Length: 169
Image (cartoon, rainbow, N blue to C red; front, side, top):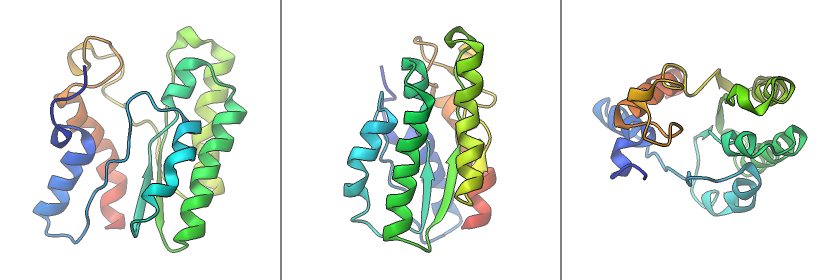
């Protein structure tokens, strides 16, 4: 079951912080639960109809949980980055790192985790090393599925992103 309100998800929390600082930004939460990088790459164009000053890319975890080849995930994420930078060359970019559970296998897990710092470096992106830092594996901060954060968990995710995002604002 998803969060009852988008304001409880970390993008909504970040919007609240932006508003409290009276900054002229509007957060657009374009995430879809269960979405893969391929699906995100397919539907990114609709988002690009809006002027984007800062783009936070938080996608790929579902690829890892499904065992999608890491080369495919990296290619899809690079495709999204390319589309954003082509349309908005002055857009500032932020990438959140992802990890997967050890049950997916050590070699796959290492290859998967390596995608994100490599993309951040290649594309000169601000990098959040692990979006779920402080939340992953903490049962009290995750919903019953053990994967999706609770409202309290989303506050921590927001802090993780905010540390890197705030200086860009």
